[in-house]
Image (cartoon, rainbow, N blue to C red; front, side, top):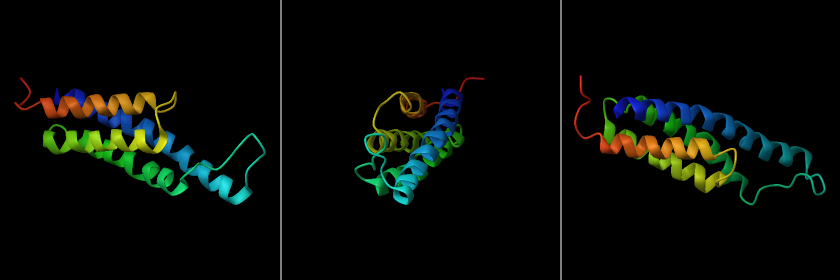
Length: 118
């Protein structure tokens, strides 16, 4: 269970990095160049998107990396990252995999009370 949590957390964090990079970049692009008619508008809260773009993927990767040694803390970090991605980006086609993988990794890390079997 700990190995699954590790893998899911790291993969979710890497996918979250990609989503976060484009989310942060979009808000900066609209700030610099303005809105484009009906094509591109600024998000409702760009500071929230920027903060979540930075923090959530880092929490997912850190939680995944520590899942084997400190499973409770790792599970909590991954669940906070999952909630942050959902809060900042919503659930859509680009975020469904990192949110689901991070949430499942967090639950698996919390469920792994005993050490992994040899």
